[in-house]
Length: 214
Picture 1 (cartoon, rainbow, N blue to C red):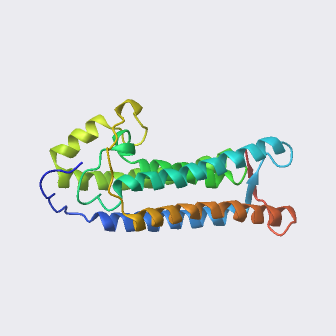
Picture 2 (picture 1 turned 90 degrees about the horizontal axis):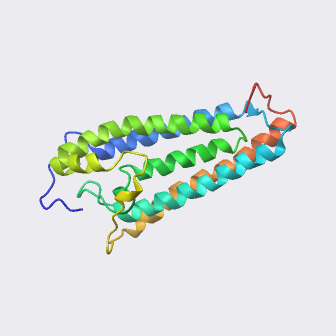
Picture 3 (picture 1 turned 45 degrees about the horizontal axis):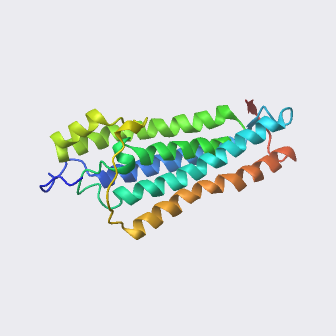
């Protein structure tokens, strides 16, 4: 949704916020990967059906994340600093990219076969995004003024309000941004073979399981 006039320059650079957010997330995922070497699911081997169900739910959420993030980029790719995007997924949720990424993080954690581990990874990811959005929204309010404040009043931050759906009649897309978002999101798929390798090492006794969680 164009603002009609060039937006004011914010005091805080959104790109710097995005870079900081990525560093924090990758650091957090690295720590989670380290912890996963020595934690396991309480469902294995006593309830293999539950264990496998958690894994498959996680895989489904990873694919939802990949396609959801790509879908969002169709609307916002290259526009975030120039105009207030309030159509498509942004008409029902102010931060759909972050919402889909949180689902993907839960899916990554679910590859352990543990709902508890998935919940911790998902909650930690949400906490990072919640902190980042507080800064981002101050920047957007400073940049777009009353227009952004009206938008924030009618559209929730994370939980979608479906009755607010409004779509665009047409979109101008930036192919390289869409491709980059898609490829970045597909990195979540690496959690699937990585978890299998860790599980095999644990079962063969090469990695001790210090904590089992349901």
